[in-house]
Image (cartoon, rainbow, N blue to C red; front, side, top):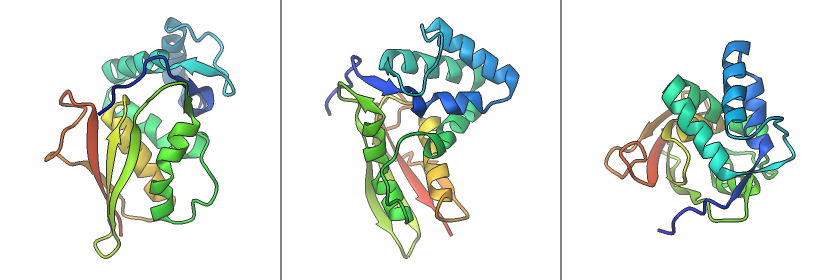
Length: 177
């Protein structure tokens, strides 16, 4: 697959509202981490170098662990720019990639792909070829599925490559009731 373009940019709205929603201790430390990356006054309407955000997530994973990274991912459907007409779980997952590219520009940043949706089994398979942490993607999928269904379970498909094991992609199985 094509490598990621580290000259790409991300839109501030895709991250900063999530940070601002954390309790003061965590929020203050995350804002300090952003400052260390050169983001002194986070603005939702500004485009930023993707290397800054990737370093930010690397620090969050290292210093706060998978739960906080998962929480950041869960905030995306409520904050980032997404196309209209997301009125079913199928459309929601189909449009994640569109939303992803609406919040990134000026370079290849990978993709989110709905591989299959078995409506009888109530199971979705997603492929994620992007530079973001697995727990972030898992949080994103959990929140997106909860917009439409209950009884959500999101797991990494361990039979496929994973970013946690050094790959550039991860596959997820999303089940619901």
